[in-house]
Image 1: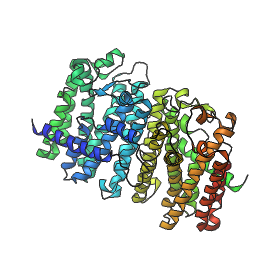
Image 2 (image 1 turned 135 degrees about the horizontal axis):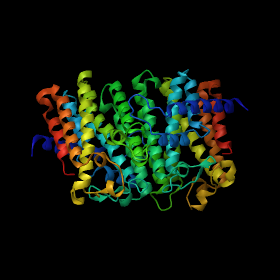
Image 3 (image 1 turned 45 degrees about the vertical axis):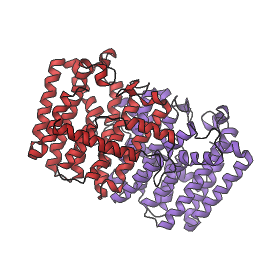
Image 4 (image 1 turned 120 degrees about the horizontal axis):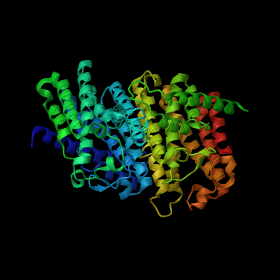
Amino acid sequence: MNLFHHQLKQDAITVETRLAEVLSLTNISGEICRPKKLMMSLRHAALNGGKRLRPFLVMQTGRLFGANQSNLLQIATALECIHCYSLVHDDLPAMDDDDLRRGKPTVHKAFDEATAILAGDGLLTLAFDILSDNSTHNNPQTRITLISKLAKAAGIGGMVGGQMLDLYPESKSPDFSEIARMQAMKTGALIKFACEAGGICGEASITELNALSIYGQAIGQAFQLADDILDVTATESQLGKGTGKDDKQGKQTQLSSLGLKVTGEMAKDLVSQACESVSIFGERSDLLVQAAHFIVSREN
Amino acid sequence: MNLFHHQLKQDAITVETRLAEVLSLTNISGEICRPKKLMMSLRHAALNGGKRLRPFLVMQTGRLFGANQSNLLQIATALECIHCYSLVHDDLPAMDDDDLRRGKPTVHKAFDEATAILAGDGLLTLAFDILSDNSTHNNPQTRITLISKLAKAAGIGGMVGGQMLDLYPESKSPDFSEIARMQAMKTGALIKFACEAGGICGEASITELNALSIYGQAIGQAFQLADDILDVTATESQLGKGTGKDDKQGKQTQLSSLGLKVTGEMAKDLVSQACESVSIFGERSDLLVQAAHFIVSREN
């Protein structure tokens, strides 16, 4: 196992532990009570042994600047709450209608639809509760910056809008650039936020933040291209979810307009761009370089 | 029309105007694009001529302390986004399954379920975007306090948890205190937040904030009792939605355990408590006193 895989695994364990803490059955100050069934559904949604790529990106970009580890962990946890909520809602029958997620029943299958809707709403709201907490950063302005950026990345002009465009494209047959924009909103915005958040937490300079933004944007695009490729090349047991879905649903993807070969080349170009951008950090960026390569070579 | 009704109407117009601005079709800095259909569904959900009681409470409690009007309007708008999102999700077929809301088709009827889920998610996220904005308060710590309190009031230990307990009570036949707690979470927490938020924005003292909390908690309880009463006494055209629903669904309410007469008396006692609490503000609390009386005497 190379250093990147080791760190990814370590960070995944750390964030899973913190998620289990913030999703405890006991209510915290300012809350009236946490209903048990609701909390079980949130735990089902969030404590599922995911790769935790976004948390890793927060932690690793923050380490470049020696940011406080427990601050980074708070941000990573909040971001993972947003990611997990989006999966719960996307899996609903009215949306992508998925029964399996990482080989386990989706929340509306393990519980029911009403619970899944509320679990998503609860996780989304919790993310902002976590970011607003003193323990996320001692400077309130830094917390505000994180909240503002996350709200924009996750909201109507970001992830939520991207999911809408995925379900209801604005053109009858969207071209490559429209699909790319939809993907930049649906999955790219949160990945980009993950990379910027570590820098914000670690008080990076504008030049440094800019390098992280470019890195985040490039790996976000590469991530989606790799997903498109996996959808046509991987097996169901590799992915822990259905494959060939885009084709079955007649959905236009970047791959369907570019073809498998060009999509693969484009993903590799994006990885190069990403690595080039963080080269200003020298050796310290090694794990981010490995992460970029992992994103296009992963098997699930 | 008394002064309260005049001010309620004025504030409703002001907040509706601001909601229309924040829900514009044009994306703002930090967003990629705002899909048109999504924005139409958000506007359908939020620009519906509601009473805007929560916004009024924010504005009026803030006026006690001479808080900046445009700051108060930002907070009122964010809170109304949360309230409107909760209605959109509560109306979904998997939840309360309502076709009408204020006499108009609910969002999933006017659009579809997927759009309604995303519209709710978008409004919820937008609330935190608005609160984090510079224009909400020049002190970032004040914005953080508002975000933290709103997240707790709206989240798993507040409104979302309350909706869960309403759908799935933890006891087979919940007693009065369990129903009261569920209601305190489902509707009380946001109303209490509305009353505290004006004070926070206007830098009220701890004693003053405490008076507002007690006022908010009492009118929140009274509001729910009045809702229970309206559900059995009002006509469908008065309410702009179905009536007698609690009974049809065999749902336990505070009214079903107390009876109509005692429920009415209890609501009046709560109004007295609320008025007593804000009496420390002298004549300046007149509109809040009128608001408390309105809450139990309204016809819809």
